[in-house]
Length: 293
Image (cartoon, rainbow, N blue to C red; front, side, top):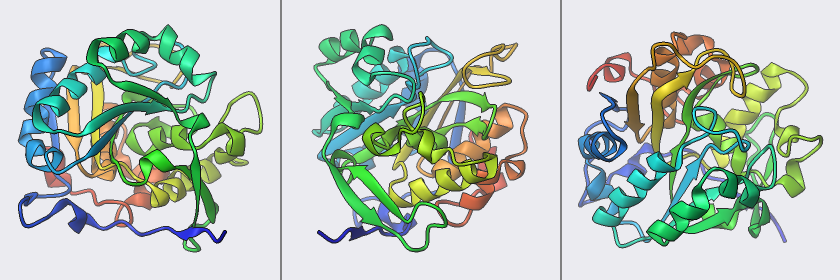
């Protein structure tokens, strides 16, 4: 079977006759009071109900790289607030999906409280490492000419929900980097880390793999849990002190990641994968980074 040709990023997908997004690159950044209140306010500011009501399938992708609790991984309380919001504003089927890099995904779900979340909200948990995949090809990608994408992500509305973290190799790990988790371990595991083939031989290759992967499937909506933040690395080291105390939301994952970098005190232009993605997967407008703060 021949691979499907992957499509390029098209910001006009966010506009229909019924929905007009004022600025696809708008980033909302609000002080955190509670997940229920602040997630609602952030998504309302993006006119999210008008987008969500058109969906039939919504897939929420947290960052559950391993079984370490928040702020290393996305807390179930944040995802629960997003599920509630989607339920109020859409009739879609809702799934929580991850392919953990550091261990068996269902064990990670269990360790981090997602089984309880699943039962409480009657939402299915999906192990992306075990889902049927489709073979995609994009000659424009520099390193990842072919990619095996879990089929569930092809036609659903994808919400990326990372936590705010610095990263020892990619400088930050936010919405774009969170997509590494969708790569099935059966295809991309080369070491103890289950997505290691997508980290390349050096940090430069890692940045390019992040961009290439997002050319096949980028998030439709990003919600960054920046209530605390990891100041120096993604799996260890001190949390941000004081806590960042923000929720960030945007349709454009590049703009969202630029804002997240800013909250960590990092110039987004120095983060190679964000710079490479700017103008390709989204667009950073410095004015929009401050618009709703």
